Structure formats: C-alpha cells, structure tokens
Image 1 (cartoon, rainbow, N blue to C red):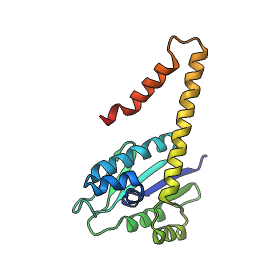
Image 2 (cartoon, rainbow, N blue to C red):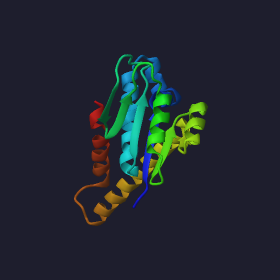
Image 3 (cartoon, rainbow, N blue to C red):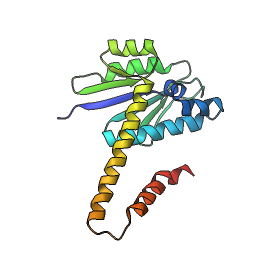
Image 4 (cartoon, rainbow, N blue to C red):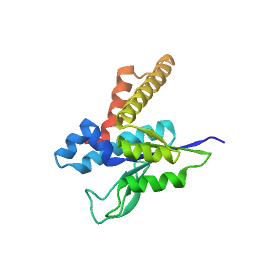
Length: 175
C-alpha cells in the first residue's frame, strides 16, 4: 500500500508571498489570484498524484462557508470568524496517521510550528513555488520525450507543430 500525501495550502498566505499573485491582489483582482493559484496547483497535483486542499479564510469573502472542488482540488472557504490557520490545524489533526503524509504550505512561522507539533511537515511559499516550477520542467521534458518518440516513428507531424499544439492546449483556457 502506497502512503497517501495530502498538501494543505494556506491560500491567502501563498497569494501574498508569490509576486505574480500578490500583484493581482493589490489590483483588487483577488478572484484572478485565487484562480491562478488553483491552476498552478492543479498541474502540480495531477503530475505528483497527491491530494490538495486549499484553504481561504473569510477575510476577503465574509459570510460564506463552503467547500467545493475546482481544478481537481478541494477548495475551502472558512466560516466568518474562523481563520485559515485554525481550520488547517484542525484538519491536520484529523488527517495525521501512519499511512498519510500531511504537508502544510504556508510562510507563517507560527502556523508552521503549530502543524509541525501535530506531526505535519511544512513547506514555505518559496519552496512550493520551486516545487511547482520543477514539476513544470518535468512535464515539459516528458512532453518533449514523447514528441521525440513520435518523431522517430517517422511521424508526418513536425516537432515545431507539435510544440505549438501543446502551447495552444495549455493556453486555451486563459482567453
């Protein structure tokens, strides 16, 4: 039996730490910042086959409590008055067991210490960005290896055409 990995992400903490997301937040486009974060995490999740839970507290969306799946990721908005930190701490306690590895992504030092005390590992916003960028490179290498294999089979497709189609596939939803 394979050990399950769960990555719990403090959404607004990551948004505040990643320059491209923080810029959107400062431009009062928090929804785009959330969507971009979820998109980045989705590719990471699929490639690494892990469960991801992204937690947003009621700071920017007061009065709602909801949980839903988006981009194949569980997204949680805490209830008004509940912080993402308290929600994450509660969930870490529920998930920790010998068959589950729980990692919490946040740059909040107090939160990192708290989840570490409960048995979870911590990952800073910078470390998460590095992991996601590394995964993107791995995906690109896998795609190029695949196209090279096709090319070696005397495919009618040129490698440049396949790369362009791959580019279109990744950017079709962004328009």
